[in-house]
Structure formats: structure tokens, C-alpha cells
Length: 168
Image (tube, rainbow, N blue to C red; front, side, top):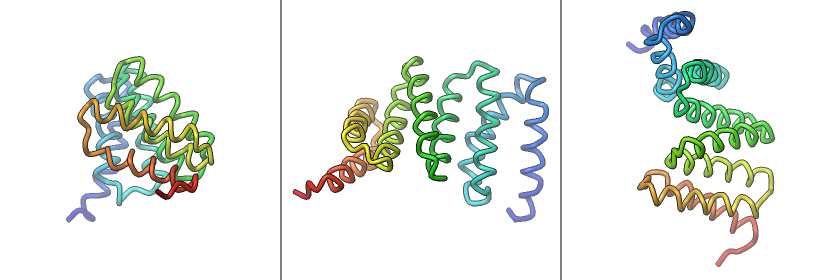
């Protein structure tokens, strides 16, 4: 069962991380473990463990010049930090992720990051910028055909309208 395998999974994650600096394939595996393992094991990892996995992936992605993985790690870190209520830190990390995604012209990630930034700005009460960012997110996501994420952008825009008292 999964419960029996979980200690082995964690053991090998640590082993891969410990050896990732000395082997290119292990470095790639470390990044993959951090990005996809964090998703796969979402309900098994504590919030702190999820953050640790993705921070480890960020370090290796940076060392191996994998900017696309860096973008994804930064977005996930920002999301986790936001969920912990550290909105200013989350905003800073999100803007770093956005700048990097824009510099490598990763429009899909730009759309997702803009959505996250909109959520953070809503939580901070910065509704004008949240509207602009969420609108931009919607446009980018539509342009890249990322229909799965459109409801998030629409919801963020709806929250802004609701908070501004625009019910019709």
C-alpha cells in the first residue's frame, strides 16, 4: 500500500537531493521530484515539506540553468507563502517569477503567475491592480489556449467586482 511505500519515497527523495549536485541526471530528477512529487503527494506532505521540496527544486533548477523549472518553482513557492499569509513575501516572489517567465517568453506561466499575483493583490486590498493583473491573466490564458485555468481568472475578476460593490 501507499502507506507502506511512503517512507521509501521520502528516503529516495532525500538521496536524490543529496546527490543532485554531482550528477546531471540526478539534478533533473531532483527538479522533477520537486515539481511533480509535490503535486502527486500533496495530501501526504505537510505544508512545510511541500515548501522544502519545491525550494530544493528551485536551487537545482537555478544551478542547472533550467529557467522554465525555476519559474514553476518560484510560482509554487509564492503560492505556498501566500497560503501561510505572508502576502508581502508572496508578492515579491510572484513578481520574480513573472519577470523570469516574461524574459523567457513562457506565456503559459505568465498567465498562471498573473492569476496568482491577482489573488495576492486581492488579499492585500489592492483591487485596482488586482483587476488589471487578473484581466491580463485572462487575456494571456485565452491566447495560449489554457482553458483549464480560465475559471480561476474569471473568479478573481468576480471577487474584485464583488469587493468593489459592483453586483450587476
